[in-house]
Image 1 (cartoon, rainbow, N blue to C red):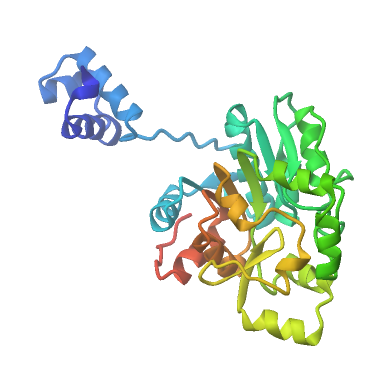
Image 2 (cartoon, helix red, strand yellow; image 1 turned 30 degrees about the horizontal axis):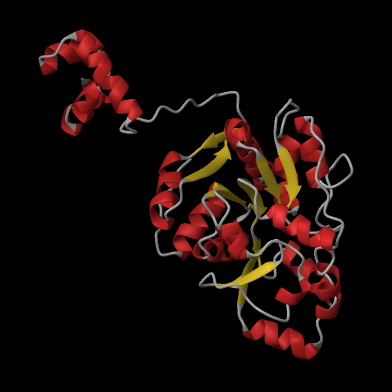
Length: 326
């Protein structure tokens, strides 16, 4: 059977058919096989991942860059990466990443039972690109509410917006994501409803999270909302924060930071996310490179969705320069 043939046979047949453009009959004559055997060999090459078929729709506003995706997967041990660039003309990074993430969401939707969302502008761009459909999926928040970072374009939270697009009822998390003191967090976290919401959030099978970079956009707002004292801010800065996921800050090595910020966040922890079967990290803009690289070092992420400029910047920061693509 073709499945038991040598890898060399599969690769040679695939090269002749896909790279040199020979017909199956010509491949059969070149390799001394029957046409039916060549058909089975090519099918086995696809099944075993030797051949990957990608369809690039010229009408799509986004073109994926396979070479950079592969570099990210190999360099950081990811299961998948989605990297895009405008397919002609120009496009802002944010909606581009949103479109890539929405495509990924649609592809994985049949496998999803419980999907969790964080918040931020990249997640908003993602939810805005998800088409309306009927889906058998629960949509849960991974953190408490954040009015400044968790609003959908049509009103309501991102969880509510995504649930509405899937034709389901959203789950609720009736607590703020960021509080002003450890005492406030302790009091809120002691509530049964909040503990239950956090436990449910930690049990999702897919999590879509925005990746923040310290000092850039949403991370500035998060720190401001904590109302740290001068001494607390000095302690925080001494920990050398690089980025965050749902308000959970980490350093360049990917280690989660402790107080004073950790005891002001009501959200799943990085340890919780490591136990989620598939965590998809979204980010847009080359200025996010430091935070994305640090996030990759946390061991939390299974998939990243990035624009091409950011993906190149991350690889360059990791010492893995890539030639221009696209």
